[in-house]
Every structure is written in structure tokens, then in C-alpha cells.
Length: 174
Image (cartoon, rainbow, N blue to C red; front, side):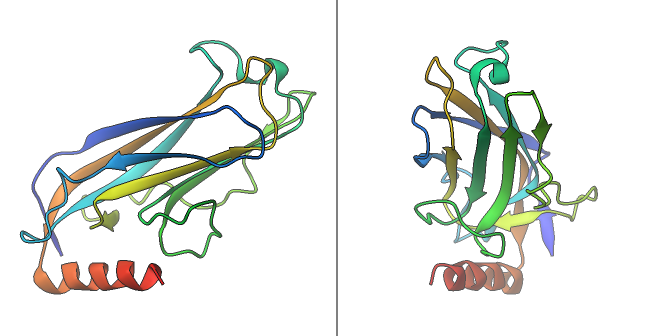
């Protein structure tokens, strides 16, 4: 299905949430990695989400109170958080917290690891990945940072596979 053009590498982007109950957006530009003419796509192997406060190393939950932080990575711009059955959803995470220090992520069951083999992964043919984050509460210092780390490689797809992925992506846009 795919021929590897590169070894695995990591793309990183951070989104800073500064207001409660307000969607915050960021993008990861894939224009240098995806080439329609050469049927070149980005193969996403795994996605990691890192939650931090205003400064690195400070405890996030020290003054967060009760609530949740949700973040999603999509290959189409949906303009907000999406349901788990949306074809554009690449990965998602949710951090649930309360005043007693409870942490959990059980309500977010979307797999963010796409397998261990070199052929496993989610293929992206769009020129950007879109990040949407939202928090029901905010730190007293005013910032929750979420870093998204995408482990990926560049692949060349055969014509039929590239066309199938492009059609699926276009269909998901409607």
C-alpha cells in the first residue's frame, strides 16, 4: 500500500488555553510533507498529548478546580470539537480533574496509537492538521498549555490507495 520515504519523525505544536469554555485553535502545517502530484502522504503512527500550566515544570492541578480539558487533532477544519465518529478525527485526549486531585481519561477512548508495524498508521493527504482545545475551567494564572506530539513518516501511496484516501477525506468534508 505505501512505500516509506522517511524514517519516523516528530511534529510538535502547542495550544494555549486562556479562557474557560472557549475553543482554542492551532494548526500543524503539512505542506512540506504532502504532495498530491507524487501521491505523497503523511503516515501518523501515534499522537501524544502533554498537559502543562503556564510554565513548564509547575503542577497543572494546583489551582485548576473541578472540570475537564478536551483536545482533538483533525485533518479537516471543523471549527470546534467533534464527535468520535467524525472521519476527520485523527486523535483526541481528555483530562478530567477535581479539587481532590483525581485524574482520569476513561471517557476518551479514541485510540491514539495506530499499531506497531511499519504499515500501520493513519494516512493524511491534507495540507494541515487542526488542533481544537477547550477547558471547562482555567488556572488562576490564566493558562493551560497542551502540547501535541505527532509521530509520523512520509510515504508514497499507489494511485488507487491515494485516490481512496483523498475521496474519503473529501466525503468527510461534507
